[in-house]
Length: 323
Picture 1 (tube, rainbow, N blue to C red):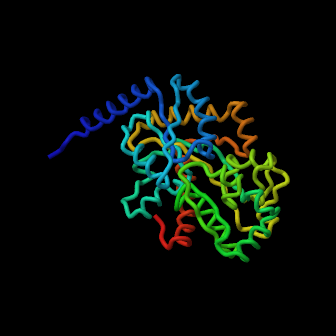
Picture 2: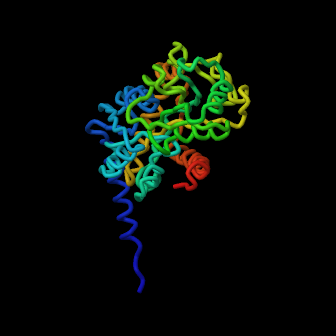
Picture 3: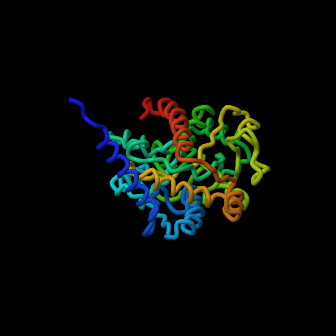
């Protein structure tokens, strides 16, 4: 029997119209950005800079809610269970950081970064650094490696959790350099322990380290890029330090709950891009050694998928399995 497709078409049009109307009135209350990183961390600093500008465009407060711990799974679960209305968002690494993989390590069903969440956009493009505590009394990457080889596991390095980007990149450096070190997961920021010498070194984004290196509180040993950073011109690249293949640039991304209206996602993306174009934001980012990114949700998804493939390869090397 022939069935008219007209009712289906009408329903689709009505759904689209409802979505558009909802987006036009969005937001009507504060927007909350949840992150599994502590205050003062790279994602926290960058997100707060942009959030302070996004609320001007959205006309409602944009609140940053830090929920660190358990490799980011606490924050991810809180957001995944939230209504898909655009009022609860998440900031995580563009490789989904270690959050997705942390579920695997805990033998729990992992969340899917493309089903449970929707990429809204990249917040910034960053540079990563190897930095050491001044207490070590070293000035180069080769000196750090020499200590690691002469005193196996004497060196310590922190991260937000097992499988996090900081953990994986430090492991990548350690393995390629050929020394042993002790990983220490932190729920809060490890910076004070690094400055005090209770931790030896860290591999992390310049957004968290540049100011500390410029002030002499940490010693910058190498930047994981092909070129030196303008904000830290005296810090050599990994290539100049004898490790030319040790390069990493990622950044962080903003995600909405899976099922959020495309119109709302586009509205958030527009506010994010507008915030990144502000001169004050560009200036503050330059001080941190990072750059705002102008991109669409589709651009962000493509970048995330490519980066996740690279990180999965690294996870296999470190843990013997990917997601």
